Each structure stands twice: as C-alpha cells, then as structure tokens.
Length: 278
Image (cartoon, rainbow, N blue to C red; front, side):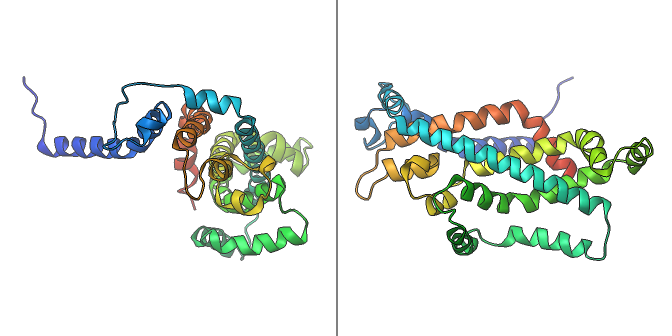
C-alpha cells in the first residue's frame, strides 16, 4: 500500500530545512573563509566554494603565541566561573528547596527578574566595585562578573532537581549519624549529578563566549580572553584581517563543539527536567 505524505508535513519539513540552512550558513562561511587566501576573501562577487584552499591562516596563528595565550585565559576564566557557579548555585538551590519561608516566593521572583536586566546596565556598578577592590585587569574580575550572571538561572534550575530528591533519604542518613553537610555532600549531590552537569555546561558556554566583560575589565593583552583578544589584535579601525579572525574563531568553536557533542543529552535532559519546575 502506497503511503501518502500530507502537504502539511512536506511544508513543515521544508521550513525546518530552510531554517537549518539559515542558521548553519554563518558557521559554514566562517569555516570556508578560514581556508581562503586574502585575495579570495575580498573578491566580489564572493565565492561560496573557494577554488584554492590554503592553510596560511592556520600556520600564521600557530606561529603567533598570543592566540594560545588567549585560549589559555579563556579556559581559566571559564573553568573558574563554572566552579564558582556550581558551588554557589548548589548551596542556594538546596536551601530554597529544603527551607520554605515566607520569603521563598520573593527570592524566586527576584532570581527570575535578574534575567530581565540588560548586562550593559550592570557593567558600571561592577566596574566601580572591582576598582575599589583592586580587581580591574584580573581574571578573577571576569569570573565574578560572569558568575553574577549565571548563578540566578542556575539556582532556579538546580532547585528543581533538589525538589525531586526524597527527603526520606536525608532522614535515613541523619538517623545513621550523618551531619547535614555530610548528607548534602554524600547523598544529595550525587543524586543531583544531571542537574549539576547541565548548569556546568550552561555556565561554561556563557563564560567561553563572553566579550563585553572581557573588553571592559581586562586592560592588558596578556590577560585577554579569546573574543576580546581577536577584536583588539585582528580588527583595526581601518583594516580587518578576516582570514585570521575566522581561523581563530574556528579554533575557539572546536572545544565547545566537542563539549556539546559529548554531553548534549545531559544538557537537554537537565534543562527540560529542571528549568520548567517551579
């Protein structure tokens, strides 16, 4: 029996394919441009498939030590931000889950409202605080400012996971002589591992892609992260080295692509399981 495909399904499939091509085209263009010569990059009309692939930009950035320095700074800031967020969000989320007070709803609303503020509005206040603490031009200032952005959403997310863990497990551990902190570390945290992994990935990606804080709080080239380093080194006022920019961008995207490829199912499961709970 011949199956008939409904026109609605064909239309939906066509829309999905067009949307996918639209979203993937900037990535394709970035990769292709990194293999073009400077002459081909500025050619008009542009060639979507270059005739002569070249590795000159990749050779150039591997000979340039500053790119490795930017990547190293990016890793340090991203890992530091992730650790700070995991520690603060897990403790705050557990407290909100287990200790119900009359201010609980207010705290939840306040956490949600922080997502509505534009980041630009926070920069001046953070800059004044870091300047008084002598933290300007330090990686710690980036870790703290990025953590201030990621912690509220992470608290909301991880609280949903703690809500699902039965309190009888904690009561049994307390009867066996465990302190509350020991129960939290040994019993609760392992059970909330999917949620911790989800907020860890979310935080790492936010910190990895940061540009605004890095360009504001870091003043010297040796402490710049990748996005700020690219902007300051390869994007000038009158000329742009698009070959180097796209090549460094490809190298910067690869770690995130590998991370998402390996842990995608944990992140999707974590976001769908925790973020939609009150």
